[in-house]
Length: 228
Image 1 (spheres, rainbow, N blue to C red):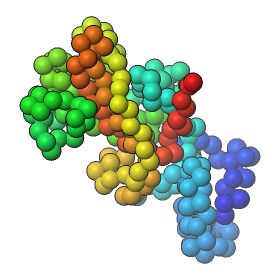
Image 2 (spheres, rainbow, N blue to C red):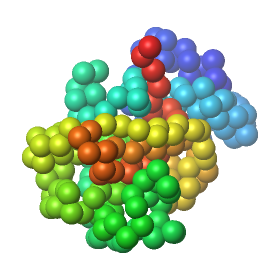
Image 3 (cartoon, rainbow, N blue to C red):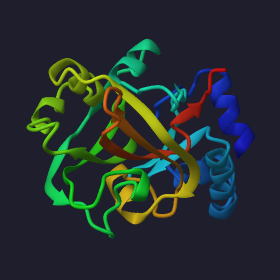
Image 4 (tube, rainbow, N blue to C red):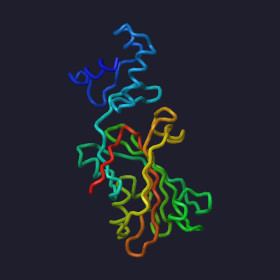
């Protein structure tokens, strides 16, 4: 089964983004049983060749987005530099006051008592959902920012509209299984593997924390590249 699909890709009968035939169709075409077909598909999923959307089926994975998390990431510009089309959602979840239970970077993030915007986003690449983000933004310093980032990248808005030069610190990158909230947003199976990235951005001038950003990527959507 695995070899059959790889051959379809090699001969361009399947291309990036294409939907694969259903498992039932594969069974009828090959004479293989459902378990054998599913095993082959899961092997290709682990290799990052294909991915599955809940209640929609299997798809050929597009080329991974080359991504250096140590840089300030403007998602739109990053995608455009690799001939990809980026879009995103930006959902305002209101203002919260940072306390001991807030997921705002702990001692490295916002001081207790800081009022912050809570916002979540889904990052979309060539029409496919690739990442879910949960962001906290300093409500006083970045007053009124969320409507501005419906069409422009957050880093760009902060630097252009608020005249603040950002500096990144305390980067965390780790593999993890995606939580149900994330998989529901991305339309993938609960417990799918992913890459978690946490970044804190500060005002380069006075070192004040301005954003704490949590990114949850599909493992097959990005390729991390760290420039030396």
